[in-house]
Image (cartoon, rainbow, N blue to C red; front, side):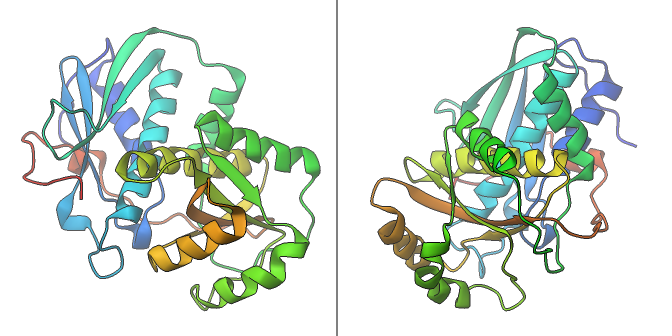
Length: 276
């Protein structure tokens, strides 16, 4: 296995664990489009251009959503290791391929919520079977909304009165997408690359919160492009920018998907790539 460098007073084995957990984030078709560059005082998050899916994601929306999810995992893993992560998204003075820089803001002890989310990282799965028709408690729905707000996003849980209006949109989603007790739309106040990275972190925090509470989820990123996002904006109002769907409910245990060895996620040189 590749030798990891030390950073933030963490020994190489701890750094390897942090990167491994970051790599357990969800991504379209399990493409795992993230790469990490570990320097003496910073960890850089890069998008691997060779793993982008141009036909499905020409604007790199889902790529940035996935990398944002990996960033949330990285933050939780660092917090669990006693490091308070300080994140800069799309740093202006770095290479165009850098999506985020993570530095140490000192030492910390993880709180109960961070511990619960950290423990949920390896348990999170993509549920590919229909979810059960069991109602999700109001307290859990509130916790999911709070999770989105913690990352500066908004989780809209679709009301029954909106189902008919959304039915046309649902027919445009993949044929194997099934209705669930909770149909959630994750929105951000703004749009663009930075908002997509923020949305990815919120998406993963909501998903880990659901996992920690015994729920399953099926992600439906808006890969069909701006048309669906515009239709959702008309339904929800002009202010929020829809970034992704989540179907949330109770389901059978799902198998884990194969993951790259954490050593494969490290890069030594900066790739020649833009933010997209």
